[in-house]
Length: 492
Image (cartoon, rainbow, N blue to C red; front, side):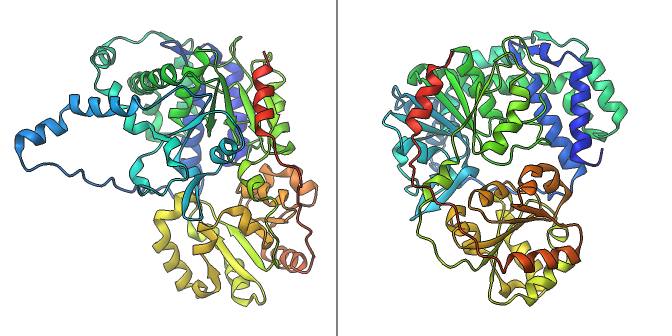
């Protein structure tokens, strides 16, 4: 398998041949978890991604020099007690947003969640964010309305150090996995995972479900204390978000996923689900909130066949809508949305040469969130190719995307979901990668995106687009988020 379409067909084949909708461990529908894990693993092994993993280290806790006090500070009961104190601050709310730090952006010196905060500001009901990230990623006091932000990893020690967990870890797991050995045989026959095949054996399954139950225990505590009407997630297929959906679904709480990026026919988290349990997967959200009609139609292809277990709506992009009516300025930016790919793939020679010769326009290179740890490496690459002074990295990465799009005349990317946001602003996108063509066929057909096959076509296309006048879309209608949510609550 070399292309996303081949990967897509492989998953369709698995679901056709195997009863994946019947796979249950400890009452958890595990196929969505395994499908996403397998999909992302295949992508990491087959695509030109930058796979090095750099993490921002947590600051070391200051501990006492007194050994007795130090032992008390680090004892599991102390950690559990501190977590309980934070849990006790949780009160009844109407809505919970389970999101990760990757979806934050800084505006006027404060860190905003791009999808949760605009909605929370637009509704009257009480709501909180449960951040699926570590607090050390941000400085204290830098959060927008920080009193409504709680950190999952500050709370989870309450259940991680419980006596019940010790018993659960060693207990045998109840598994219903018909023909799972055939699944392993298919993976082995395809020879795509090499030494990664062990990620799907029984030992790994036990570890996976133990981790799932850890998150389930803490989310059970959280939901029992807050009793929300609706649980929102952003990127439902992150592990904590899947558990949150599961816990909420068990309680018949509405679960809604807010779109965070491209939902295309070759993105296996969002497309081509062909087999479902009668009641629907309990690890998936029941409602999908889409930015636009392109994404809505991709989802509807399988939602319409799923026995009404799921529903679909167009609610817009909260972060884009937040800036929609900003004052417009002269459009003189060529925006290149980078992705977590190797630099040689991101910067073919023809692109480097065009950047060198560009006049009257500014090149802004916007880093993908997972590239932030590679900033020095990227700067060195640009310097070595004599284009470091021709590009803007800092503002392009730190400013909110909608503010940049207001000044952009042409958008370039390999296959980034920023293509959707650019189309919303009537800004044409140049797609440099076949995956972009496969992902955004509808936008290409409407003339809002152009797939580039070689240097000659690139030069001709961008030169033509830079001479055109763009009338950005501007809406005078304020999105009524409360109405959208109320309509969801009225559904059966």
